[in-house]
Image 1 (cartoon, one colour):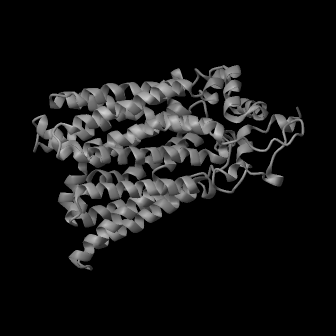
Image 2 (cartoon, rainbow, N blue to C red):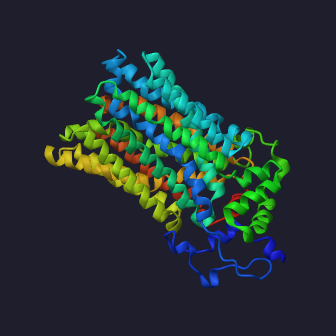
Image 3 (cartoon, helix red, strand yellow):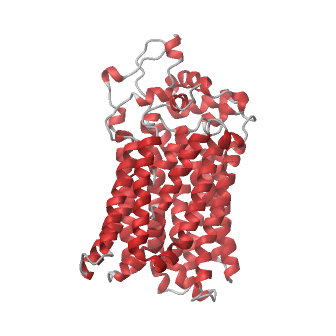
Amino acid sequence: MSMRGRHLDANSMYKRGTREHGFDALDKEQGPERLLNGMGKDVGVPSWKHSLRHVLVATLSSFLYGYHLGVVNETLESISRDLGFHGNTMAEGLVVSTCLGGAFVGSLFSGLIADGVGRRRALQLCALPMIIGASMSAAAKSLWAMLLGRLFVGTGMGIGPAVAALYVTEVSPAYVRGTHGSFTQIATGLGLMGSLFIGFPAKAIEGWWRICFWASVAPAAILALFMEFSVESPYWLFKRGRAADAEAEFEKLLGGPYVKSAMAELSKSDRGDEADTFKFSELLYGHHRKVVFIGSTLFALQQLSGINAVFYFSSTVFETAGVPSESANMCVGIANLLGSFVAMILMDRLGRKVLLIGSFSGMVVAMFLQITSATSLVSRGSGVYLSVGGMLLFVLTFAIGAGPVPSILLSEMFPGRVRANAVSVCMAFHWIVNFFVGLFFLRLLEQIGPLVLNSIFGAFCLLAVLFIKKNVLETKGKSLQEIEIALLPSE
């Protein structure tokens, strides 16, 4: 094999495959853009189909994440009546926020688990607390039993999405890595929609909320079972010194003609003897601190935009407009899902940075509509429609970029040796900000009003646009090794 052939990795091949969007287009002949292997033979680009089924299995963790975020939306009133804490807003808030606390704990340990047992086993492990926690909540006879179940579920929620982002990044060809990564956001949206659909009868049928929790056990069990038949990340295997196993997994993901070039490129950046040299201090004081800062700031701005306040409390706004809560939640879910599909289409065509800037810019416009609706410039009737329209636009534009891109981008930007632990640190920061936004939103709404509060959210969205323009690197179509080299500090 020639030197050129040895140093062309499969990831580099992916990115040159095509700029046409659409899965069918990805398999078309590309003329001069097709590549040669080391023997001078035209081998084209690896098919996205080999990795897709593994990606879809992993995104079940994101489906469960979305489901458990939304499962208490329609059922909370019934739960509070049956368990004897109806009217206790603190207890009702704990049913929601305990899950977020568990997710914070899970995310802190997600990197250690993913590096310790591998991405595949970590995804199987995240299903276990979700099964146990959902079963405990479904069978709960008291508030404390419900809270303990929610804490277990939250732990799985904290581990699952972080590890899924790593897994999808490491098993996907670069030219569809963003598209595959968007499936996690789509799965989250489907989980939210699923929890809303199954929760509709909760107010009419006594004890139906227990069915809603039991229903989540099935997809968690499917995740644990199907991951047993999925590939392990070749990047993790190589980092653990298991080069032969990494080659075998690359062959399943890419096909035979791409394995040697993928391994050659991988060996240039990830050395198998580095598995035990990582220290967390590197993320705070070492040369990775800038990327940790970018990632943590992106997640903070994502939450400070007010998106989860919209998800948690959208029913109140819609009820003011005379729209039933069931219809309100469905409208928000559809907007979120539609935006996720748009992100999937555009992620590898326009790039991560463009989508982030466009998304946060759209959120600024949406918040302006919300702000205008709270002023005396418009009539009360028009203000209600502006508020509802602004909220739906906000959710739609969020799902196009600000929702899916940060987790994809962070999984791409960190080198393999620190990737799992670095992403877990950034995700933990995300959960902290998420928790406090949910905790203080209603109180701030009462004290300073929607005009000032939405202005603050809009200001954070505008700040995000400026921050992204200055600090975020475009990773579209680049191999993970190329991204790592581009982010190396200059001497």
